Image (cartoon, rainbow, N blue to C red; front, side, top):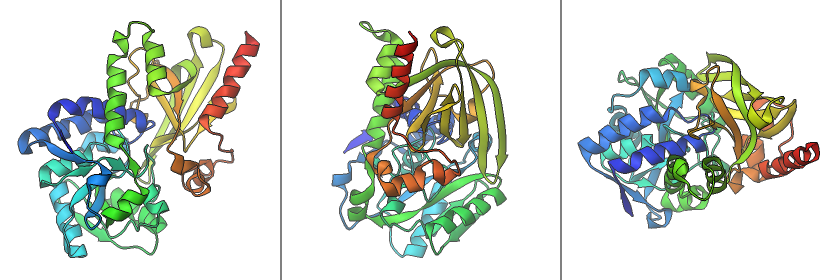
Length: 370
């Protein structure tokens, strides 16, 4: 067990935004709310999975909705208490700890802020090891954990509790509730025992996020390597393209941000082109008309100089970026994981190729060009 203090938040937010693969919410908003919550209520206990009793009840809490809307609406801090009250009354028992729904700039921090506000611990796990747009797209669901009963609360005080026949219906009905509430709200569900959580959660998420945040923050101080080499090697990210964003197509509908960022190669990659397609999170990337990488691996854009991740809601013309890929958690590379989080789930007729295999092929082609 360790305590999450105010000084930990910046690195957790920064690293989480890389794990969010363009989604998971804005890290700045998450940092503001979580910092305020810890200053007002005190530090948060972070437990490793094995420190949780098997008979505890834990639940997944996060923010759901279009990231651009979340950025505008924010939260007022009372949503967590209201959601917890609603779910506990339905379950007839207390929630002993929160777990992360996903890793993302906002959604890694919501459970910490919520835990500070209600006075319970957070477990150092999540259900994805990254961010996905669907409420049913996590390792909890893969292990048979029902997403419902699930509580939804908005900043006005509206509350809803849904129970569905399967996890796909949770996404459909939950998205309708989200849209009715203005496009974003706080959700709490996927309650499970401590024993079940240990079987299916992705472990060490908060620690990993903090380590990645520290790597990004300190890359400029690297001595024996260039800042870029330090970032890529320490984060285990694969670089596919150095580019400038030359166009962004974006629309918000059904509680999601959909769109495409068009990239033009710069520097050593001048003459090459690419694009990234997203639905809240980046789903797949092309380089010179060929698929470079796709979900469930992490398709990421980071600032070319600072390596700060660029979320889908902050994409803008002229920004210099690096298109990089990170390997997903092993659970997503199983047949069940690819079915739930791979390209076909989002309607794309492209095969899933692990990012390290795709990268080796791209590197081989570059070597031949030179």
